[in-house]
Amino acid sequence: MWSDDRALAVLGTGQALPGQPIATRELLDRIATRFEVNVVRRGLAAARRLNIRQRHLARSFEHRVEGTRPGEGNPDLAARAVYAALADAGLHPNDLAYLIGHTVTPAEPVPSNISAVARLLRYRGPVAEFRQACTGFINATLFAAGLCAVSDGRPVAVVGSETGSVFFDPVRAAEDDSQLVNFMQMGDGAGAIILGSEQSHTRTARICRLYHGRLETEMSPGLRMSGGGSMRPHRSTTETLEFEHAPELVRERGNALFHAALAATRAQGVNLTTVRHVLPHQANGRMNSLLAPHLPPGMNVIVQADRVGNTGSAAIWLTLDEARRRVFTPGESAIILGAESTNYSFGGFVYEHV
Image (cartoon, rainbow, N blue to C red; front, side, top):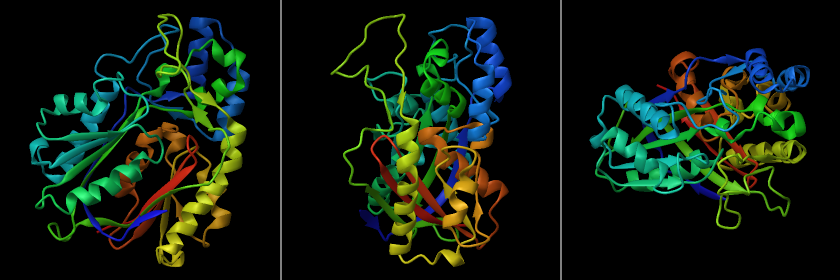
């Protein structure tokens, strides 16, 4: 496990969600009407198990194979989230020393998604990108910590974004239960944070006690997309690439990942009984009941997935942004717990609110 004792100032956070929220029943009725795929009963049952009532989507499901709506592509959402975070911090794009992105659903393979974000922001500085999903947030933050230490006080922006709804073929929901689970579980969106060195920015919220690790396992990934890479390129205009979801592996390893994250938090010297909140990866809308048995009594588990779904790379930043505005009060702290089933990694940090 990698850990970093440095603290970072949180200068601002922001988010962007595409379109209006779409309720589960409305979404299921839409694909039944447009594609003659009636999975309403099974879809509602899956959504109830996941406790996901609605989500935001960057596509309209007008066609079986389609991209994102104009102005709601992955770079568009990421740029809007960074703009919101910069506005929260009272900064402009070219005040940044570096811009870091993380996503597994870029608008195109090359050039990088974050390059398109920089273009939309009219940001002229250096960029970097991680092709990583639910723990991309902590890898990006660890790299930001190193950059902030040598940036002469200039801040670094980190943005996580996903538009995974385009990698779903409605017809496949009737053929493959795992694809139906993907359909009911996932949402699109972007979240961003502006970070600075603690020495250069006082009287701000901060994050500290950063860590990142992986479980030692030879198990197959719980989520993967095997097509589209150099091992298996696709050229067809009628075939949709899809995420191959193994829900049983995700369930089996999910608890182990969160246990590892909690153990790492304790190893960092955090006394969980002194922390008011825990903000976990938003895998589903039942994270409170899943985590409660493993936490001290009275700890508040912050859950947003019931309203936006599992937004992958964006999930932690989206939820942190909302919690900063609606949940935290000055002096409170939260532990952030990340878990990713693509490579069975975990990571997080402590957030301290002012």
